Length: 125
Image 1: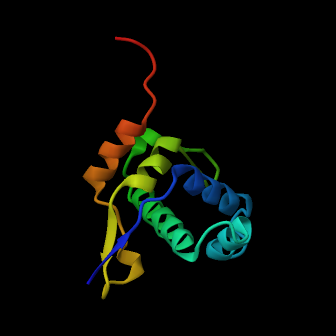
Image 2 (image 1 turned 60 degrees about the vertical axis):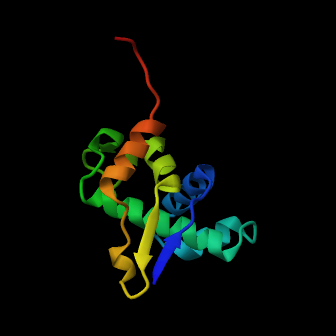
């Protein structure tokens, strides 16, 4: 049976990422999000945010979307453009019930189309 991860508000996804990032790798990311939102969100919303952040991290680890990711030389972290978070919030995400959560991933083409649509345009041609 297919489990569909519901879309989330992009602001909540960014807020969750900021809370987890502030811990600088200390502690568990899920517990950090639960504590940060402190009963402001329902459990299914927290789960959707967690799954979407996990799928976004996997996509970035694979090297997808390099136009929206900056690698800081000598740093362990990467800077990710907000367009990637907005795309992660809305891009369809699902997993078969019998698959491992490690297999949770966005369709790369659909994700990158959404990231492009969510990107700010600057300059003129």
